[in-house]
Length: 569
Ligand code: GLN
Image (tube, rainbow, N blue to C red; front, side):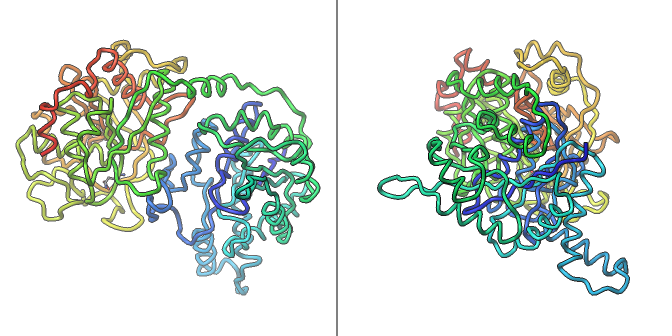
């Protein structure tokens, strides 16, 4: 069949969960055996998300092919259990860039370049590229921003044109919210009526309304919305606030989102296979045992800066049948008391000097007190600095990122890396292969590769797996472990468990299990490849190690305060 296109727009306010709606619908269609490719189109003029501050905009999600994208692509990959490419992400900045590049090359043959048709055509070309290259049964296209935003107008016009050209193969879903008036708490539908009117003004008729609500929407309320918005009451899907994201696909299934989508597109309904989603939601509802994971990072009001790391930690909980609680630990003002209360520590990726010393202290704490530790990208680099300073005795060891004139740059900018500059939109990006040594990490990856393994066994059991020889992980960084210090770091006890194929770049480190129950770090971003259906092994292993330790009653909360004083100083 020709690819069917589902457009998802949002109304009234931002942050209603368009991305989760897109991802959930994708998961429900996939559960019926259809192939689905989602896409996000953002309205801002950045060419990609790479130069955007994650503390304002949320994390930068990196695809296999190295695109720096919006965090919604993370939701899509996790819910759909599939890897996306750069085709799934477009910004207005990249659209304009393409149009002006064509203009310079003379592609437009002397024409006057205009928003309509040149920009609108370029936007539609992107919608088409997905259906033409991968030919999925469905493409789900989420529009960033809110209907009514000035900057969304061009994209909405492109959507209108695309729908006109592909009438029978398109539907449109509008995500809105119920309003509740104070003090009666009465539900009000007027804002959503106006949002639907605003969307129609652009020539787009919503076929389905997804309504975020804090209480179930009654049939009477649905009838009222149906009448005023001119949409079938059966096509009004209530999306209740939930505790866990992973409840949403099943809630939407009950509300009939996939069934209505299929019937609108004239496709025969088939029974979905929801067993995996049901098992995931069952496990996310476990209330004990609780494993507390300290996430040592920079904190502002927006926690989405570490979204994929937090989700991956939860996946580790799913694989180990425990409840994972992520505890924010502010690296700028390190609270050692907080470290004593957690069962595992993660230092995630990051840029710049702020909070780095706190991260190094937290790592020293994890190493000395045998708290399970996972270091991600900057979390590997800071672990290397910690080892250099405290095990190899290089007291002023640091990274060139923090001090360009460092005496001992154990982490350095390697100038022969093609195209990577110290600032701007260049980095080592996307999937890279590592050659693995026989180690805990290579056995963790072996568990990951075992298609049948959903539950994580004990770490001792994992050590019985046959180690993998190579691994592939996504990268986003500029600095590397400085080859001049490889030898001294290894002699100090650090194990390099994975290297770039030419042996020059350190991809994974760990301390042997005889020295530490679980201390692993990677230069890559494993969180991007973790899925609720199968946790990433470095996260699953972390949670397993924490669980094993707490079962052995050696949680840090019970350790003498003395043992942590080195960190507090
Ligand atoms: N800032 C470090 C680098 O550029 C680490 C980057 C990261 O953690 N993603 O190498």
